[in-house]
Image (cartoon, rainbow, N blue to C red; front, side, top):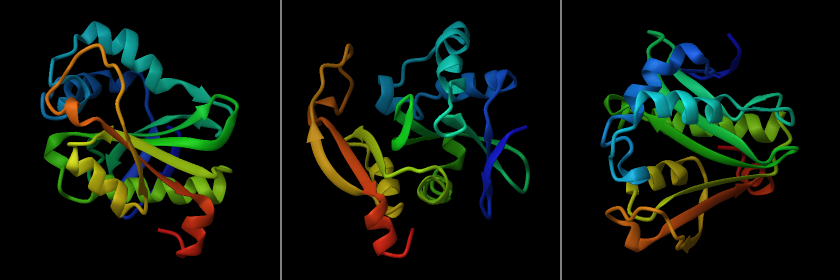
Length: 188
């Protein structure tokens, strides 16, 4: 098992084929995917054929995958996953941060803890210069995690999505944190 990092309460490790059942459950909780597709279920076949290959993709520039399984250290329970994926396949300078945790783990600070640890690891070990994150403007929980991780609002933007979901009329937001800003405030 490839472990990227551990925190006081989390282990972030490489995802694998054995995580299919947990990923399927995560992709089929309407609240978890509400701001992604309006809460519509995903077939097991789609998770295996589309989601899993994307989540397992390896990036040589960071020496591993761009998505990591999150487990509770004390119990080993699968919480969900974190994304720390380079924007360009051959450069670690700009990465996108994301997270998808099971609903039963919301409100416990896991997303913030994992985001801060990934940002620290990116800036201190992986050669990252800029961390970005995006979500729907109405996704206040995700926006709050970005802010607690030290990221700042950059812009609101509107894209043409194939399906309109509740809240999409407010657009999407982008947050970012540059390495020099992170270092200036003493790291997050």
